[in-house]
Structures are given as structure tokens and as C-alpha cells.
Image (cartoon, rainbow, N blue to C red; front, side, top):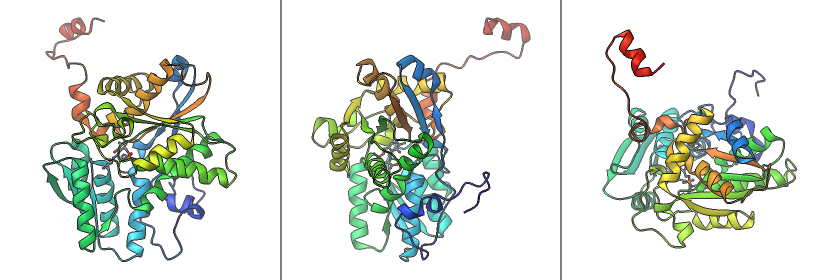
Length: 354
Ligand code: F0G
């Protein structure tokens, strides 16, 4: 392992003893992981907590999916796969396409038509994936993918692939490595429920390895229009502005519920209004631009803090799962108006009310 601080070491190298890889595993990496844990000073002050933001949007393709994809594609390569496939609300497809191109594999992605943020689609297309848009939602796309892999030799890289979970659990390792201890709470958005499952596994493994003496309460948030784990049954037609988590029947729902109850945490819903409010809040007071789904963790933090849920001065980590640039359309359509101005000094000054 290099000690050069300018070199981002592949996640597989950094956490090799905790991962299902051997010397025979080719390391397919884009230098993922090692993302910042940023203290949110103004949110902390406002809420009377120690709030940290795990900036997963700073992964190579702009989301946490890279952590899982480096393992899924490396193991696929080891096992002789030549093509990968996923259903996706966008980020998984971007990561699958990038890692497949890196591995010299074909990539097929099935997405819900018209419900993918522009940046994510741009990524999948530019990395050379074959993109199919189905007239349906994510859950239907995932059903199709499950059937395809049962019948054709294509490797599935959705988070029902256990290697994805193995990679994504390293987010928990990094939080403990950065804080020197586990946080009191982890706030995390929940869609297909792979990531909350992965973080909970990561914290437990690190605890068992003696790296931390406690475990966080897993505090998950779904969008109110797509909250099957809160409602207790699948949602036929999930709807939310946070398209990344527009999922009505999460594949790892049972594990997510177990993570919440075993850790003394919870899974609750936040409205689109609360999500967009949190999205703009974290961007305007912390300089941190995340995508709407990621802001569900902040929306949940603010809501639960308002209810007095967190013990004063607790350490809370919010996982900001994807970069704001993924979804420029939502940023612009929910943002303030742009003011037009003539190229004239006096009029510009007047408009600026300086
Ligand atoms: N945040 C973002 C930005 C996501 O893209 C996703 C899931 C989640 C949160 C929820 O994570 O599914 O593990 O509970 N995106 C998937 C995709 C479904 O296809 O990109 P989860």
C-alpha cells in the first residue's frame, strides 16, 4: 500500500481483510471511497448536536454505489463474467457502466422511463451502457432483471448481489476510522434498502473487530410517497421528487427493518417538501450540494431533532449518498429565479440593490 497521501488507495486495498477478495481477484477500481466526513458546524449549532456529513457524492461516479460496484465487478471479473446488468433509478446504472467499462465488460441497464435524473443517464450513456427505459417503475425493472439473469449469463450488480453490500459496508468503517468511535446515530436515506443493510453490517463487523465500543442507532428515511417500510406493505405506484428512492418494494426491506430495530433506531418517512427544504438548507448553510434523495437524511435529522428525538450533543452522521450535480433539473426547477440584466453597470448595480 502506498503511503503517498495524494494517491487515493482503492477501497479493496484499504479494507482487504474485511472483504471477500483474494490475490486471485482482479482489482477493478476507480479509486473509490476515502470520502470526507465533514463537520456541519451551522447545523450542529442550530440543532444542539454534533452533526457530520459523509460526502458520498465525492466518489468517482458521484455516489456511494462505487463502493459496492468495485467489489461486484471485481468478483464478476474473477468469476469470468463478460457482461453486467442492473435495474436502476440512476446511480447504480452510472456506477455499473463506469466499472464495466473499466473492466472491459458490457453493461446493460434497465431504468424507469422519464424518472432518471439527467446526470445519471448522461453517465450511463457516455460509459457505453446499453440503456433500456421501461414504461414502469424501478420495482418492475428489477423483476425483469431478475428474470434475465436466471436465463442468460449476465452478472447481476444490483444490491441483491451480496458483493455490493460487502463494498458498501466500508462507508461505516470510514466513519469509525474518522471519528475514532461509532456515532450515536446514523441518518440515511432508504430506497431499495441495500445501503442501510450494508452500513449496519459494517458497524457490527468493526465492533466485533474491536474498532469501536458501541453501535449507532440506524435511523432511516424513506420519501413519504414511496415508504413501504413505514406503511408495512409494498407501494404499487411510488412517487417522489427524490427519484433515486422512488421504490415501492425494497429488495432488502426485511434487513433494513431488522437494522433499525436491532440498533434501537427507526425508519420513518419525510415529505417531498421536507426533502427539498433540507436539500436547499444543507446547500445554503453548509456549502454541500447533494441530490434530493440524499437530503432525506437531513430532512429526517431536522424533523427528529424538532421532536426532541436525539439526546443533546449526540454525534449524528448523515450519509449524503449522491452529488447534487446528478440532478440539475430539480435544482433549477425548485430554485430561485434567475434575474436577467442588460450589460449596463448602473442597471446591474440597481438590480443588485447594493
Ligand atoms: N441515495 C441515492 C442517491 C440513491 O441513488 C439510492 C439508491 C439511495 C439513496 C437508496 O439506497 O437503495 O441502498 O436503499 N439508488 C438505487 C439506484 C436504487 O438504482 O441507483 P438503497
